[in-house]
Amino acid sequence: MQEADFYTLLEDGHIACHLCAHACRISPGKAGVCKVRLHKDQKLFSLDYGHLIAEHADPIEKKPLFHFLPGSQAYSIASPGCNFRCAWCQNWEISQTCDMTSIEDIPFTTPENVVARALASGCESIAYTYTEPTIFYEYCRDVGRIAKANGLRNVFVTNGYMQKEVVKDMATWLDAANVDIKAFDDAVCKRYMGAHLQPVLDSCEAMVREGIWLEVTTLLVPGLNDDQTQLEGLAAFIAGNLGKVTPWHISKYYPNYEYDAAAPTSMRSIQNAVSIGRNAGLKYIYVGNAGVELPTRCHSCGEVLVERDGFHPRVNRIKQGHCPYCHTKIPGVWSGD
Ligand code: SF4
Image 1: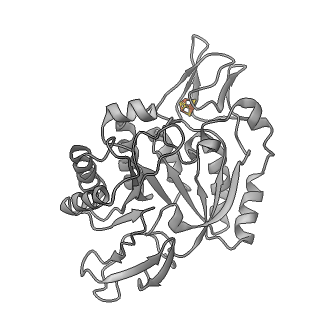
Image 2: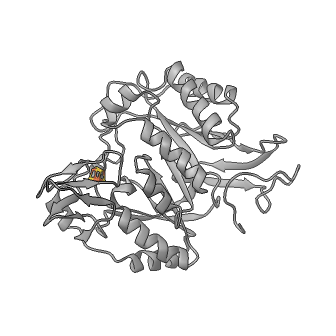
């Protein structure tokens, strides 16, 4: 067990965890909502530090990050657990079923080993993904600092539920994040994820302020988050608070885990979300999991810059981060940056 950061021992003997917006108040011998941070002997411990449940080299486009070193591979790691309880979680076997005993059975991997494996596999970045990286933050940071010193970039695929001081800390070593804004209605977030909306929006704004490259994803779950009001609100938030050039990935839902009340997202619903995004002025909208490839077009002249086959760029005309037709700087992180 590794002692955690971001906590305070309270006068009444509880521990207040400041890592994520749940802000758990934890009794001795108990763990927080995430089940992987334990109060023991007046200290808080990260139970899943270095216990990796997944390790793969993935295309960076799979995260999805489309404006970040396109065509590169990201060495992708995860520890078990999550601080959300999404009923349709696609990775529920590793995010929702952990307990203290099952974590102990997972072998320990040093941060140095992760970086060595990433370098040996030719990856250009390390992605903290599949489960929620915020809840194994100390490990991510330890890996990330070594990775950065070795010329690798670092990316988070996250629900964005970390506290503000954590975003500030992340900015010292993290290059990019994809934040999943799962709904734009606090009641929906509370009921289906066990969390609130505002902290996620605050994190997105803080990441942009801190210079972390940000892309946003929304899985469209029919009848739950694909109504006009939520989508217009979300698109307006991205355009107004994060910037019109922030990429928005609209993703198709398929029934999974405990939620089968909705059929897979229809193309009509996806097209509606794309239209709402365009009406809000968003320049970079993408569709995922639906067999639809929307190319990257220059937000200034409209020329096609990147065409993809699934997760693989088939054509990439971006030259040193600029449009070759009108020479506008294309927002993102590009090779040579
Ligand atoms: S990381 Fe979040 S869920 Fe886990 S103990 Fe801390 S505040 Fe609670």
